Length: 216
Image 1 (cartoon, rainbow, N blue to C red):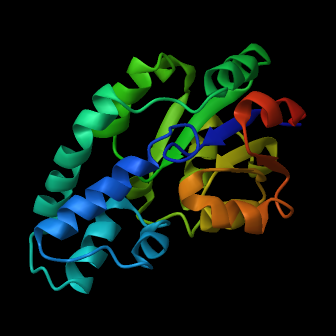
Image 2: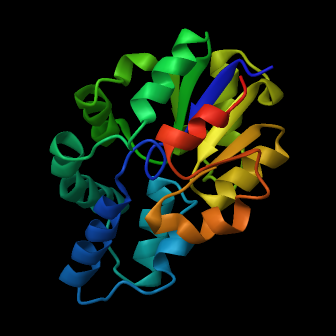
């Protein structure tokens, strides 16, 4: 029996991945680099600080990691605070789950400085029991730790919980840890969706339509 749901934010609940594509373009372009074709795929499952360390090393920037993180936050903050919206059908799904007594949680690689105001602006911040960021567990989403910690906060077992995620590595990690899984389509991670839609418990192309198929 499903007692709880854990949601990724960027690319799952939030239509926000375009923000990070722009941040990558602006940040690297300022330093004379183009965004490599493999860059997005490599960093997708990493935590925020882990991405900064990788970027610093890959491009030989020799910059302070905290300075990189601060610049990324500055580049993304305005869009998260004033522009980023929920994907269609998300609020209705959250309301249905809450009405049916499910606990709702978040597992994200982002940070509260960005998503906190965004969730408030979209009227869903109070829906969530708790939130776990990858920096809290010290591992990115190719490991299940962030989902396991969030389930622990909600007091549920993995098999009593469904994870909604657009990231392929995160879904595989969650499934292998015993969670029910729902792969969510986003244009920025479409390859992961196509690869995994038959392997996960549910495939969500459109929350307004496909989320109704989820058996609680």
